[in-house]
Image 1 (cartoon, helix red, strand yellow):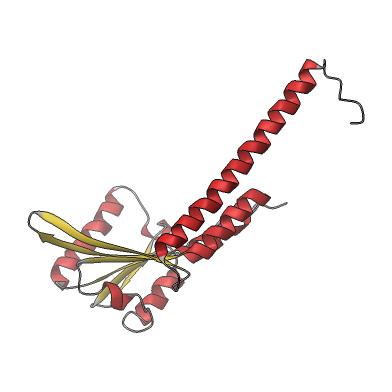
Image 2 (cartoon, one colour; image 1 turned 60 degrees about the vertical axis):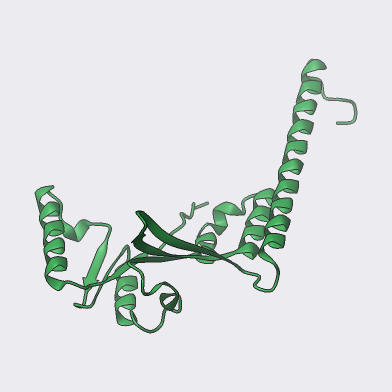
Length: 192
């Protein structure tokens, strides 16, 4: 069978405040690439700028789509604006990218399904200095918005703990069966 590798897609975007400084930074990056003997057309990253925003990603289509909708279609943008740095990670999409690898056996599928039903996304923002320290805020959102998050975490941990205990029990049984097999001189028990 053909092994399917997970794929991912990311876009990094920033508002351009000082266009001259930004252009100098882009030119320095291009010159550095040329100095290192690199061909910018072969880089695994693509970028685009429209004078107001800069976007960089690993797929041209995603960067183009972001730049075409940079101020409207992404609901998470309103939650991270107003800060020097912000980010968003869609955990659901990340988990779905690993579905084939994560569900190869029954135990892994149970853990995968529990995670898919639990984790939604992560938002972070910050970057301002205050009292000598960097301020940042992280928000982890769960799929179930109606149940207390601590209760959900407790149930999730209990499910994974039970799964771990069951795996350990099976391993002990396999070790005992192997030891019994070896102690009998490699002869399977009657009826086996």
